Length: 163
Image (cartoon, rainbow, N blue to C red):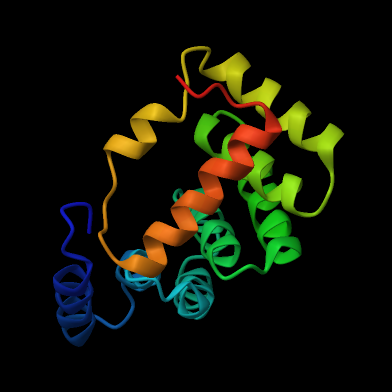
């Protein structure tokens, strides 16, 4: 998924599901892959299937963040906030989730909450900046890239350092 090959990654996960349809991780990764392909509106259904199979999964907070960023990609900002808040609550030590939440909170005009999320993220990772995110882009899909620019802008408005 991270080598600009989300379509191949999805196909491999689908193949894994033909061997064992109960692989929660495969369902979740398909959802993430669809986000990378700019099809964030399809992410939640795959993550929900993963939750049905493994509701207390170790990776559940990450899955929630994936749905949140997918919702933000599609402009469903209030839903993005709800999912990202759940992801942060599931793992308060995941600094990136705080920064994604801050970007979504800006979109729903919750400036104080967004700035607080940035401060929580920076307390965990004081050297975090937007610049490395611009370098490590896992997809070249135009819809994904547009959503990423929206994310960067939201982070900037919330007070995340540019770098």
